[in-house]
Length: 228
Image 1 (cartoon, one colour):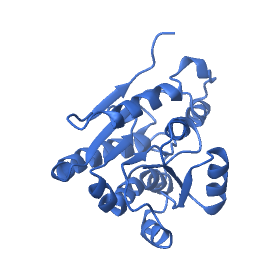
Image 2 (cartoon, helix red, strand yellow):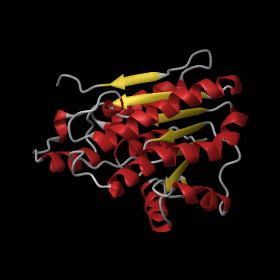
Image 3 (cartoon, one colour):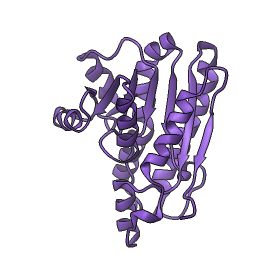
């Protein structure tokens, strides 16, 4: 049983499709009821939970008024937001929104679902970014959130090892997703999806990590654009 965030597009949608196609039970996190209906229509057979990662303080209330799965084999954190700009231009609003959606929200969702993950000796996977390892000019807010996400994953792995919970961070390079199209727009560059990683390739890396036999654990996995 899997819970996927970011299942509406890009890597998250590719992962959700692959899991459903092989007959697994999939839950998708939606930010509101309208989005939940869209996700259910796009991924027949998937179940939905409503909770906004951008409002971490309300996640406990939101899940408390629904019926999350009793057991959870994998929690796949794939949702994210990006806003580029120089440090001198980024407002507290942008910083707080980025950190909420990319770091604090995933941390809170993980906290709330740890009992189910411990019960199943499950797996938490974070889709990070190359920006989680190295920050470039105008990427400060996004990169800071992703550096923090790496720290979250590393701490969680050390804490939950004795409970049998595995933790993986995947660091995709530039991937052909709607987010990447937005990044190119903000950079003032033309966007050619064929230059970047296909989301299906990242999905393959994700499934490889979570399908690994129990005698091993992929801790960190970097996926870079190849030669085409």
